[in-house]
Length: 215
Image (cartoon, rainbow, N blue to C red; front, side, top):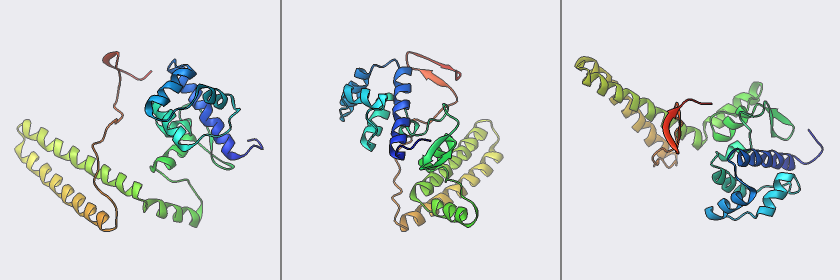
């Protein structure tokens, strides 16, 4: 950890990850600049060069989002180098594993604290809209799996098991609806878009659409 401001240290991490992912994709700085312009937020090649070299010690949220899209990586991957580093400075002077930072930033988890402060942090985190909607989506996924199981049992000719499983699915759906109504009554917007980009168990190369295992 250096004496430079934390904001500059974070920008340096982002710059390093931008360079890493740009090189992995075989993109030049000009190609990345062109991609940002096509998205609608131009970032000059000279700006990118200064950023990656450390001569520009800042990065804005709009730049972070556009760079992530241009590189086709999650924005948070540019802040917390998951898979490449063992630790990262998630807050000034606070070092955690990058996955801990990732889970905190995405609403999957909270930063661990000790004692009463930890319990308060967990309570406040659990009340946030993003966490509650994540729970809603998880419950929907469980219901969908239960329903699919019932349909599979029916196709296999096990009607009794299918009826029992479908009754369970109906109970789950009733609970989901009740939970959603309570959430809306508390002021949350529960209209949810289709889910895109779920990670599968294999990778598909768009140039060769045959499933392959992770490298």
